[in-house]
Amino acid sequence: MRVVDVLQSLGYHVLKYVESHVVIYDSPTPVIEVGGDVRCTLLFRGYCCDVSTVRNFVEKYTPAHVLWIGARGTVLEVECRDLHDALKVLRLVKVVNFKHSGVVDVRDRGVTVSLWSMYRIDVPLKVGCEILIPIDELGRVVELINGFVARDREIVERVCSVLRHQLGRYRS
Image 1: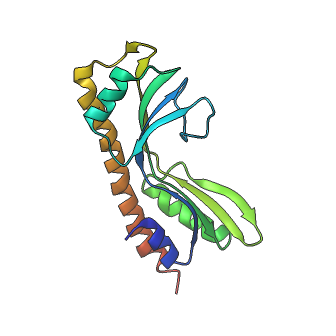
Image 2: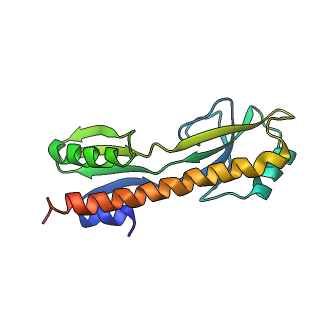
């Protein structure tokens, strides 16, 4: 069962859900949310990446800034009934490595919490024509990046379990 389904079954309204993924992008600096920065050009986004895709970008693409490969963890925005309910959710998800989470909006209709996984990594691959990681080492980088995404998915499963068991006690 997906985390969105678990939250909805417990009576929460999920406003935003971005599953963990791999990105390859061109930007002067690493970015938190690829696509939000006008100086960032998204080149690839997927749930995993293979060495041939990365090798192709490193060998054939000349970045305007820096060519990066990165992994982004899961992000959720959830509307809770009230502040007490929101704090309960935040306490539970922080225990299972959604440590970058907090209240982002308080309105009459409810409280919105943003839940961010702690898993994020960015590795520079190329600056201009200079390749920073040897081509024969790209497999190790891809393995590391895909491992971050896989680990984030395991954490999301733990979040689902904790929410079902802990919040399920409070809802009827």
